[in-house]
Structure formats: C-alpha cells, structure tokens
Image 1: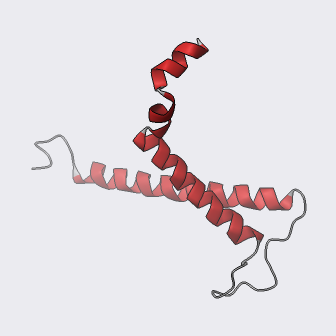
Image 2: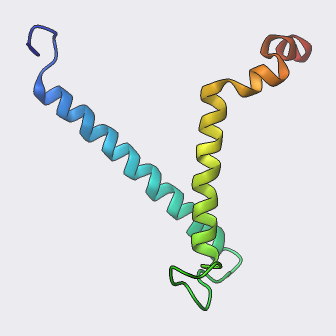
Length: 97
C-alpha cells in the first residue's frame, strides 16, 4: 500500500525523525538564547526558592516560560491572519509602496 503511493516506511520514519530533530533543535536554541541573555549582564539564573509552590521561580524559568508563551502567541497570530484582518493586508501594503 505504501509502495503504491510512492512512500516507503523508511521515508515516513525519516520525516518523523527530522521533525523531532527540528523540535529539539528549536528547544535548544531557545534555552541558549535565555542563557546568553542572562549571562551577558551577569544576572542570576535562579531565585532563592525554586520549588513547585513558589510563585517566583527565578530569571531562567521566567524568561523561558515567557519565551514559550510569546512563541505560541506569534504562531497563533500568523496562522489566523489576525494582522491582516486588523490592518487590511493589501491596503497597508499599497500605502507602503
């Protein structure tokens, strides 16, 4: 069945591996960005208390979680074309040109 569609099991597995690899690469890039951001001005990475019940879990976790929520927010905006609906995509582009 997969051979008749031009797809093989190896190709499908390779696509899954590539997707997984890209996901973890993006996670690593985000973590390294936060580490670099905190390390440049010599800011602390953690607070004095980082347990699950703490509301202030330190700079690292705060920045990482805000980075994740901002990414999800931006993905939602681009997928739903909110900016185009708000600013009328072609009208704005015509005014810029």
